[in-house]
Amino acid sequence: MDLSDISAGAARLIYIYLSEIILGLIFYFIFRHFGNLYRRLFLHTWSYSWIAFALYMASSGIVMVFLIEERSLQRTVLSIIAQLCCFLQIIFILRGTYELIYDKAFSRRRFSLILLLSIIIAFVSIIAFSSSGVFFHYLISSGSRAIITGIGFLVAGIVVWTNKKFSKGFGQQLLTSSLIIFSVYQLYYFTIKLLNLLGTQVDVLDLFGAVDLLLISLMGMSMVMWFLEDERQKLNEENKELDSFLSSTSHDLRTPIASILGLTYLGRIELQEEKARTFMNIIEERIKKLDLIISDILNLSRSKKIDVKIEDLDLRELIEETTADIKFNKGASSIFLDYQPHPSHTFKSDYNQIKIILNNLLTNAVKYHNLDQERPFISVTFKRNRQVVEICVEDNGRGISKENVPKIFDMFFRAAEDTEGTGLGLYIVKEALNKIKGIIFVDSELGKGSKFRIVLENA
Figure 1 (tube, rainbow, N blue to C red):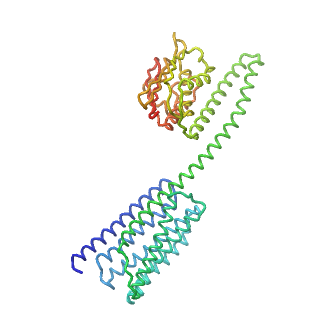
Figure 2: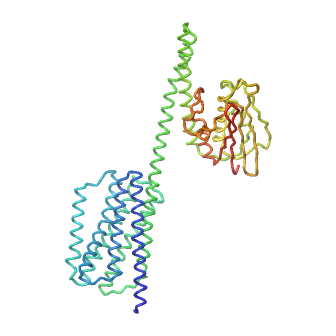
Figure 3: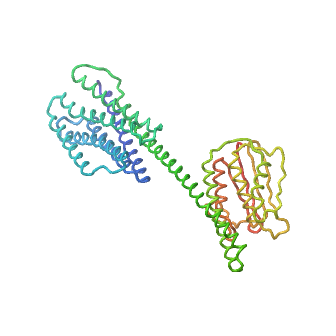
C-alpha cells in the first residue's frame, strides 16, 4: 500500500468520525431543546447519550486516525475514555427508556453505582489487557464495546416495541427497526472481527462507517418522530376528554339556566313591586348572556370536532336557513336583507363551516346595527372568478373603529360593551375559515358600517 492510499484512507476515516461527532452534537441539542420545551426527563437523559456518543467517536477517532503508538499514555487514556463513553451511551439510553416507561426519575444512588462500576470496567478492560495478545486485547476492549452496544440497543428496541404505553406510529416502528438493526450490525461486526482474529478470513464490504452513519441518523430522527407522534396522541386524547367534559358541563349548566329564566319570567308576571320587576329583568339579561356564552363555546367546540366534508352548496338555501335562525333576534325584523338569489350562486365547501360563518356574520350585523337610521340594511353578494368564490356581507350599522379592526377576531374581544355579544362570534368565524382554507377581509368605518369579504379558493 503506497502513501496515497494511506492518505485517502485516513481522510475517509476523518470524514466518518467527524460526521458522527457532529451528528451526536446536533441530536444532543435537539433532545435538550425538546426536553426543556416539554419538560420531559427522559429526553434530557437521551440527550446525554448523544454527548457520550460524540465523545466516544472523538476519542476513538483520534486513536484510529492518528495511529497513536501502542502502550503509550495518550492511547491508554483515550481508550479508557472511549470505553467509558461507549458504556455511558447505552446506560443513558436504557435509563431514559426506564424514565419514559415509569414516568419517574431513575434512582441517583443506583445510577452512581452503575457509573462507578462502568468506570472500573472501562479502566480494567484497557489497562489489564493492554499487554496481552492481540486476540485478548480486542476481545476485552473493542469487542466488549460491540457486545455491550449490541445487547443494549437490542433491549431498548424490544422495550420500545412491546410496551403498550407507546403509540404504534411510524416513528416508533422506525426507531425500533433502527435500534434492532444497529444491534445486529454491532454483533455481526464483532463476529467478523473475531473470526478474522481466529484465522478464519471473512471478506466483507468496507461499509461499516457508512452503515454507522446511516443507522445513527435514523435513530436520532426516529426518536424525535416517535416522541412527536406520542405527544400528538396524548394531546388528541386530552382534547377528547376536554370536549367530553365541555359538552357534559355545558349541558349541566344550561339546565339550571333554563330553570332560572323560567322563574324570572314568572317573577315579572307575579311580582307587583316595580323594583322587584327591575331586578328580575336584570337577572334575566345576565342569565341570557351567560347562556349565550355557553352556546358560543359549544359551537366553537363542535366546529373544531366536525370533519370537513366538501360538497355542492347553494348560497340561496344557506341564506334562507340562516335568516330563519336569526329572524327573532332583537331588531332583525326592522332590517332589510338585500340579497338577489341566482342559480349560479353555487360553490363547493363544507356545509357546517359555511353555515357557522354566515350565521355569525349575519347575527353580528343584526346585533351591531343602527335602527335609528332611515333604511337599515344587510347586503349579501356573491362573485366567482374561475375557482375562486367571494361572498360579501355588508351592513350600514355602527361600524368598527380603525384601532379595533385588527382585534375583532381575537377570542372574547368586544368592540362595544353595550351589546349582549360574547366576543366569540368572529373568533369562531376565523376558526371555521381556517378549517376550509378560507380568508376573510374587513373594511369598516365607525358610524358608517362594515363589510366582511370571504374568499374561498378551489370552490
